[in-house]
Structure formats: C-alpha cells, structure tokens
Amino acid sequence: MPETCLFCRIVQGEIPATVVASTDEAIAIRDIDAKAPVHVLVLPKQHLRSLNDATDAGLVGRLMALAVDVARNEGIADSGYRLVINTNEHGGQTVHHLHVHVLGGRPLRWPPG
Ligand code: 5GP
Ligand code: ZN
Image (cartoon, rainbow, N blue to C red; front, top):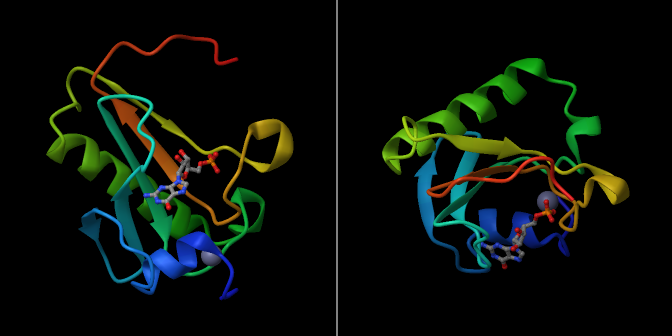
C-alpha cells in the first residue's frame, strides 16, 4: 500500500472523501471534480495500479456489482449510466489505483474523445 497513493490514503481515512457505499473490500466515493450530475468512483481497498493488475476476476465482478448498486441508489439505473475504467496513459488514467467511474444523471456523448 504505497504511502503516496491518493486513493490508498482516502481508504485509510487520511484524506477526507464523501463515501456513498462501502464493503469489506471496496469503497465508493464522490469524485472531487464531477463530470456529470452523478460521478462516483468505486475502488478496491487493496492497492492495484490498474485493471491490468486485477488478476482476481471475482473482485472485478464485485466492483462492477457495487457500481450497479451505486447507480441504483443514486437513482440513475433506469435513466442510464456509464461505467468507465481508464487504464494507463492512452486510457487517460491519472490516479494509479484501480477505480471504476460511475457516471450519469444526464445524456452522455459517444464516442469519448
Ligand atoms: P482517472 O483520470 O484516473 O480515471 O480518474 C481519477 C479521478 O479521481 C478523476 O475523475 C478526479 O477528479 C478524481 N480525483 C482526483 N483527486 C481526488 C480526490 O482527492 N478526491 C476525490 N474524491 N476524487 C479525486
Ligand atoms: Zn493505492
């Protein structure tokens, strides 16, 4: 668990965040710079640099399931939403601790830039 990792520090409670859901292995927090009316990040408590390091398919599935729970609780499950996992440089990943973006609350354009 790198001391310098922003999301590890949030998991440890060293940096405040608005937690909207939590399990034994993951938390869901509001993005500090929301790109949509609903913008939540689902992250494993364990430090994994990116999806490339997520060798436990069960964990990946549970992160997705938690993201769906968040979408339901935020009231966007029926209107629709998007799950995004930016991976490494070309994927636009800026925080190198695996996270799933849950975006919704407005129509989202496609394709992404
Ligand atoms: P990425 O670009 O790596 O896919 O997504 C990182 C996300 O983390 C961005 O949407 C950014 O706004 C968010 N973020 C960066 N710093 C913080 C922070 O200190 N707290 C929270 N809650 N979100 C953050
Ligand atoms: Zn981390």
